[in-house]
Length: 406
Image (cartoon, rainbow, N blue to C red; front, side, top):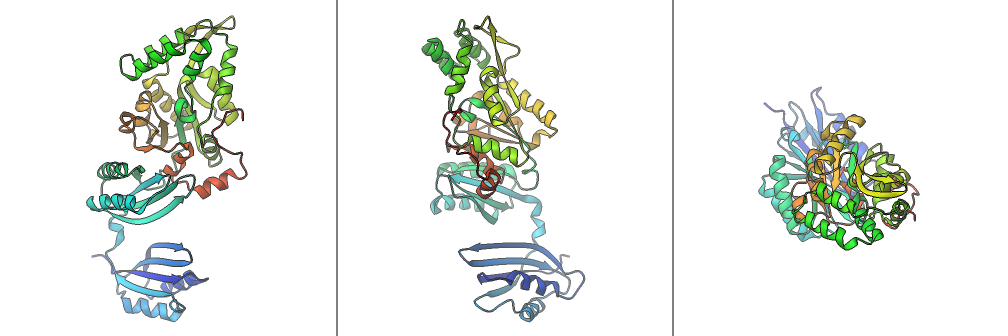
């Protein structure tokens, strides 16, 4: 039979020492089996709400109230309430995290989300405000439902009101996701490298036509890549450096990579683009893990052929697994971020797959989706707050997503 359990709620104007007084009172309760089961606190604009759950044989509200009165926890505007509750350890194993993100979050949007949580038979235990800029982000600790059911409900309700959402299991494993693998074109970068090379070769329209056919499903990625690379035959190799100088990082890309490194994560890039363009750029960012295609160069010119195996949709997932082995983490502790159909296998293989400004077919295969232009918003899905980002970043360089050389 479960022990009697009580919730003690202290609320009112925040003042120095109120927490110390509360825990001194609870610590003075008689009985070796009296245990502190849970604690939570929030302070908003000087108003405190501090809750403590305490359980023990023979424990009653009178004993708790008497101990609180002895320590003078109440008074000076502070109110104390003691009530019997159902022991919370029955649902601890079913705690899930829902992260909501948008340029601004309104009450009517939260209403839709909380109604969906209630419809799942779940309750929200805690709300944490992870960020106010450049986007608004809240993290909800939800208890009750299974992950699959809640994830589906959150995707439908949040998506209907324009909120980005990630739903995942709570626990230390989220902060243990030490490998973060990103696509390059239209994810880490604002640009598509093959399109810039097509412009430089004077074959932009032909390259674009093949890209459109591939996106329509008329040609698979590997075949489309070979056809586009063939159009580059004869292009001087020095143009690769010129194209690299034109590349623009996505807003927040520098902050994301820099914060991951400073917090002990391993950033990596897996791309259908080209090593010759990406490697020097990633070296500047401090990214040492790269899987991408290689262009064949002879006598200072592109031959129009590739060297080695093509990094296509299956190749990206294989690279994720290889990097996970090298870093020494299981796939469950990896994160993948991408926007294209050739990222789908990688997104589904990772412990957390994030679709970044992706088409619906890609987002449907991901665990989470971002529609804001800031790549560092990925950090919020790892539970990293804006305050932590700023602390890790220190006086880092501005990150406005301009040219990589700027």
